[in-house]
Image 1 (tube, helix red, strand yellow):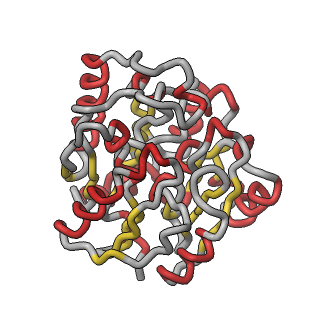
Image 2 (cartoon, rainbow, N blue to C red):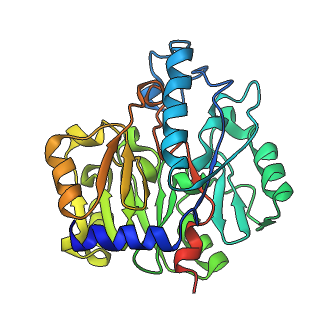
Length: 291
């Protein structure tokens, strides 16, 4: 066992099930509209049985390393299943998402009600400023830093607003490829400050910022061929990286860094533009670096 792998295992044993993951059963999941390039040509073309099988496999895998809590699905809100977009959680405070597209705005009162019912303080957010939660705001897992994507779903002022609201430094990253419309489709912070990301999703200034803030030895840049497999839309718990797919070379790079890639096919959800990370919201991640 590598030294990094041993540290990850020890940390997990010391804080077993310290992480809490919010998921929403796919009872009403379907592709009923087109709001991103992945949805094109896929309306009403998901396999319900396969949807349930893939979601169950992810839930079971996550439940081996974290507590899973469920949000109630709602008829007519097919994308409620993508709980990463519910909001941004910082301790017992939450910023509820303000969706840019009309198709998803109906989710907002249900998301707010869930956070309130579960004891979260709802932080004030300007109603005219779109922000799509942990789809576009990801806590680094090695330093006190919040990576924030903008350009497609979240407004360009979001990084500055979050920095003032949470008192944590933000790194604004402009997204330029419509296939990677949320930050979590092209960047994934990993334990120890590692960063899995697709360079082609960002403009030059954002890439330069990533290279400034993340040490070269901890940057795992992926090729487009892996990025379109949603390899960056991953969930990492206790060193296990749950993801839809990855090339042999990328899996080897993850192993060398001390991680264990776990392939969980997400084909039905990718038709809608999401995979493992989109289907989960970590409710306790902020506490790792809150001090």
